[in-house]
Length: 148
Image (cartoon, rainbow, N blue to C red; front, side, top):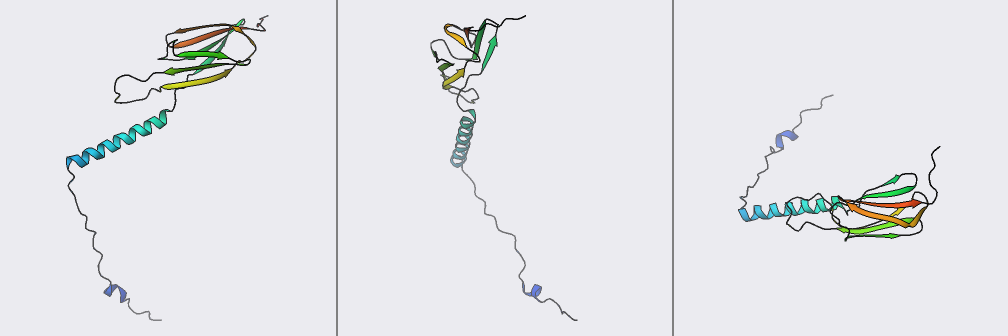
């Protein structure tokens, strides 16, 4: 069987490389592009940061439970404690820097946390203090731990 020769390739024009137009960007255009890129990075950073949420630990000394809360940048004037029957509520505000920032990683703003008591405490026995950016709130336990 004779398939003959393929004449289609003889009639196909050769492929040409695309012509790329080059434009010279002036400084004002480059400046705008740079500013847009900076804004995009700032917006992404803000989304990644999220709100400031202080971290906590509960310490058990046998007779007392102590809530330890990291609140760097907060003062006793910006912190508020409330209580419910089964939880303590802490709220406050970590202020933003007063000077313009070139880079931001530290979270700021208002926060509120409802922290359940790990066991029954005497609410009105609470004693609080802020020292070196750490808030400690000590509660007397209803049922003291007795070690044998």
